[in-house]
Image (cartoon, rainbow, N blue to C red; front, side, top):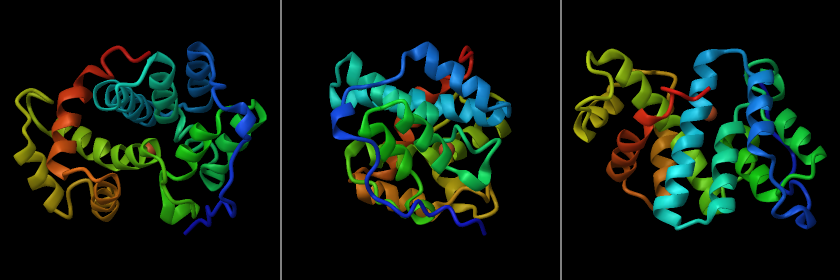
Length: 204
Ligand SMILES: [Fe+2]
C-alpha cells in the first residue's frame, strides 16, 4: 500500500484566507490534470454536493459556497496522474497559489487514515462524508434501468450492506464520516439522491 501520509497538520497561510481560484481556472486545472472521465465526473459530483450542502444546510453566501464547491471539485485532482503523490501534489500546488487554508485542509483530511490529517471543520467533514457515499450511489444508478429515477434510501442502504457491491467503497469511512459530521446516514443518502442527478449531465 502506498504511503500517502502528509506528515504535517498545517496547510497554507492564514493571511490567504478568502483567496480562491476563479471558477474557470479551477475547471481548467481539473481538465488539465484529470483525463479519466469517471474520476472527472466523481469530482464534479462531489463538488456539486458540497455546493448544494453549503447553500441548503449552511446558508452560505456565494463566496463561501464556491469555497465548498472548489474543495470538492479539486479534492482528487492529482489522483489520475500522480496516485503516489495523492493529495500532496494538489495541496502543494494550491499552496503555491496562496489559496485559502480551509480549502487545503479539507483536501488534506478527506481520507484521514491515508493522509494522517483529521477532518475538523464542517466543510472537512462533509467532503469526507460525500466522497465515498457519492461513488456508491453513482454505481447503484448505473445498474438501475432508470438510473437515478425512482431511487430511494432503502435501495441504497441495501447496496451498502452488500459487501460485494462497489467493494472499493469503504463502508467504514462512510459510517465514520456520518458520526463525525453528526448526520444520520439515511439523511445523507437522501441528500445525495436529491442532488446528484443534476450533476454530470452537463458538467463540462
Ligand atoms: Fe474522491
